[in-house]
Image (cartoon, rainbow, N blue to C red):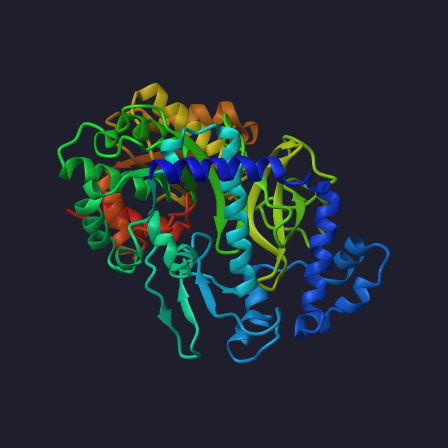
Length: 506
């Protein structure tokens, strides 16, 4: 294994040195769009929107925007994706072999995204680029002698009535790993296929001493729960007592910062945190430089991106896209500005609004951070609270109280007097009587619109605290336990009532 570590590290170093300079972002993106249109011009979608004529244009991107409308999931699925189960060549050549079920944070049910072979290839391509970027981190050879633990959704896929296999994207990826991945991949396909979350984690916990884990990937909430179970089962002080070579954690799915202190508490030494933007719609970005959680956009891997300003030029007061929003290219965005992301891809998504809001941290290279979801924009009574503003207030509240707050949920709903209040539920072991007052003060300081709303239509704030056990119990009740599942931070009023009813149970 020491020889293997030297060879792997040397291979990454050589690859980094030999890689030719990439095209400029705008040139690369136009090339990506041209390739996508060329491959899909004979599909039903391509014929309907005239891809062949668009390709003849001297102004490819402008013509594409003029001829092809913006789609959300409901529109894309109803008009095109639903037909791909029965017919070939709908929005991408051939038929997809898989459909990815999203975790459903933005609606009442999961989305179903077609996964083509070309799309799976782009996921692997972006993953390879991320691995090659480790050259800049100067990790020791011992990391490359170690194994990688990926805590995914179940790799056991279900087959629907049309013969397609379905599962969450992480499970689909694991199920498509070549056999030689077993050299370094843990827990291995057999364990990854266990459908019951608790049973799978129990097996991982039992076998943990047999593995030499150097890197872990997965959603922070579930990875943290797994690591704590390993520590408890084997009576350890820290996770490094069983995995001394653990050096890298690749986060994703939800914001990491509310979990940072809890991760530090179970580690004997610092670990490097990398962020990833891996969604059902694509492997969109990844951390490529040390000292930052910003992520490099995958501009050269089969995706074409567009950006809608997350302000009055692109959205209305409730966070919905305008009928004719301003749309910008990669060469028109600005550092520090927030944008709604549009994606065209080789999965047959075209000008597709994923629902994420991003902010550019740099332009050379283009690096982003996810600042929230369009549906996590709380503005029922003009409070205009973005997810980032809420995250910031929660972190400040946790610091003031000297406790961690991993998760929160909030909804605007009417109290018994028929007046709007914000109902918060915090996942923590906080015990305090002034949480609502403190949180209210922090949000007023962070957002003038919220302060105005509190003086007018928003009549109050209520905060309830639940334990982590209660939280996981609620997720189990909602069938959202483990894997890639996330809880929407901004809930509809009826969903909040369901949560409050669960909390009130003896």
